[in-house]
Length: 149
Image (cartoon, rainbow, N blue to C red; front, side):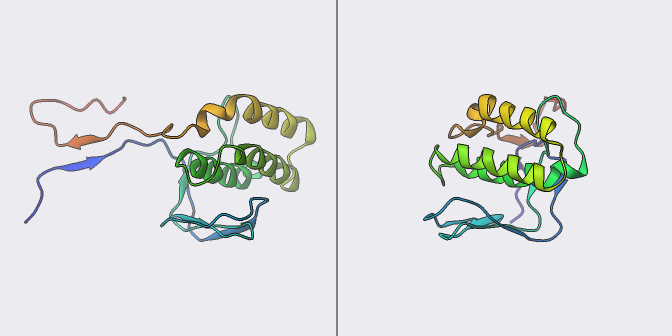
């Protein structure tokens, strides 16, 4: 039987991996596995092809030297938000973000500004359940969906 309705969330992602990406992070002793990423006990993080993220956040310009750092940072924050990692891992995620920015050629002044921003203002992005968009149904009978919401 074919269902008449779909349920969806409207997301604001800009980027999507086209192949798996693997990196070592300083988070040990956790086993996290989902369809889009996994973290092993030795700190190996694999982000799978198809994973989507929004790039660097805030009043900034996305540049190629910031995308890898934002990918890893967004994935680690997602694990914290989803309750797969404890809140103290936020500091580790922020440090990884900073290190990757420097590795990828972001000048130290700019990297420090971004690190300070995520360190001070990133806490709400790690709260369990934050970032979950409202689930909607389509088509909605008798209404016109406002795509700008």
